[in-house]
Length: 92
Image (cartoon, rainbow, N blue to C red; front, top):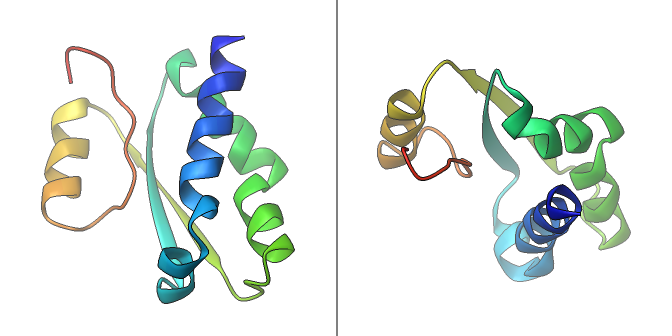
C-alpha cells in the first residue's frame, strides 16, 4: 500500500503541473539497486511517466533513468543539477 501511494505521489508530482513539465523536454530520475526503489522500477517498466505525459499532450517527453550506488552520489547529482528527482530514506 505504501509503495502504491509513493508511486502515485511521484507520478502526480512529475506530471501534475503541466506548465512545469511543458518547459522541460526531459526529466531525469535517479534510482539505486534495492527493493526500496520498487516504485521506480514499476514506473520504468510500465512507462507510466511517458503514458501520463502523453495523456496530457506532451508527446515528445523524454524520461532518463540514472542508476547510482549510494545516496551521497544521488544527492551530489541533485545539487549539481544533473538529475531532477531522487528518492531516499532517512540516512540519505
